[in-house]
View (cartoon, rainbow, N blue to C red):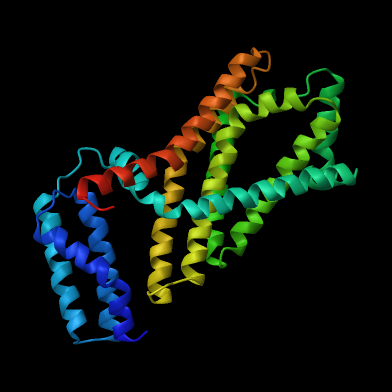
Length: 324
């Protein structure tokens, strides 16, 4: 990119940041940090392609001023762990809402494909779920306890096993993003097709409601967070395919950092899902209203944390800093 085009593309942003700095706007450390990261990336690009230019000197001065402001206003959090989940991560996640939506659409699409394939091919469910699992479920149905699979292991063993497995799936969805996002799409496809065929299997047996009210007690959070983990992989894939004004290596590094933060954010939710599957889902005799309440509460929690809260923090940040 020619220097003039680079300046023209970013000039308005730099002027806005310079104005905020000169007018001593009451920006939070987090807002200053976000601005500093953007300016540092622009400065790095300018140093690489226009070393010694006035643009590089200007950006160096602007970035230095922001850096000084950060360390003048920086306050160490008493609990870094809590700060990450309540402020740092959600304040940045709004940038990845498109990847989150894409991950959801991919998962939903393949889930429908799984159900349709099961409806048109009687052998499809067995090819996906395996003969042993299908036979065991048919036996449970014959014994009038179709959800008995959730009662086989002890509560603690199931809780730990499911939680660890789900975290592994999350890390895999993120890691496979290095294959330009294709690996992540494949993992989403596997899980979605399995879910679609699984639910159709119970529908075909006239047990759709009983299976749904039981499975989605833990599945609402579990499946939602697998979709979020898919978002992490797609963020990595996007950083490789569409580096924008950054070098591909710089963009990839940023994508890895952002994707890893998304994966870390899923861990508490996987723990909650593991607890529900290990200790609550097995209570198949619970009243419908309680199962529905758990499902709705779980869905509300996911939507609040990954959709509403990041956008709320963005709007609040813009209002406080005068950015519209």
